[in-house]
Image (cartoon, chains in turn brown, blue):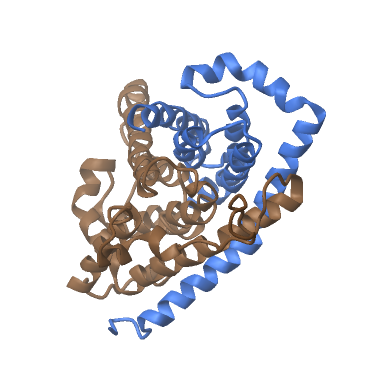
Length: 225
Length: 153
């Protein structure tokens, strides 16, 4: 993950473009289309397995029907591998073209109102979408450098814990449920993202209204930065 | 199509694809097999039915069958486990696609506290006094998200 380096190359229009195309790609917007632009859809590029039975029989993929236990689980997981490979391949392109840095750039000015933390934290915030441990390490450094205080660290860690490594986890394990979803793949993902912010703000409110009120007078300087 | 990185788009894709293959085979597959075995064991012993009956009144608050509680319990331990349990319950005909859709965000929002207390909170150096709050909010967010999903699906 190249975005832990302190020197950040400028985000180009390619970065912004790849960021928005990736969102469209997973949104299912073009999935139902019959025109050429359905090439920009995850499920279209993911394709489907062929049938193993002859025409006329009930349609059966290589997993078969009526299996149980470890054997059924194994073939089911095997069936998921292409979705995981495709989606992480696409996300890797987005990252390489600067798409995640574009997202970071867009997040920077709104982090203070959204989470009450400085814009510089956007780097760790975007890293958290891909990797739990890397982002947690960056958060520790931010606190060690005095960029965020203990309470901000807790709020930021709250954001990171709920739905951690969201992109990686969602497009790997989540693929197990994609076939059963009654909504576009991106919809549950968006709900998780929104709730990450909601959860962090629950802690932010708790700290602001309950903890700070209780400690008022006894300790005026909670920031040990 | 070269950019500020030295890799072209095809290299970028294969890098990610390789990571995807590794995750699919070394992380996703063991989790899914484990979940399928757990559900098979619960079914064979009749415990799944018991769990379903016991949790039915609670899960009804979220418009879900009682067995859906096993998905939420598994997600406390691992996200992959939660998804795997959900998938195997669909295979068993216990849950349907709608149930899976409304449960999916909750599985991730739960934030698998069993692992993340160490991996996320510990690594970030969060004051331990905030651990209970953070875990509670994870559970609350997960449960709230099911209602939100029921509203919008």
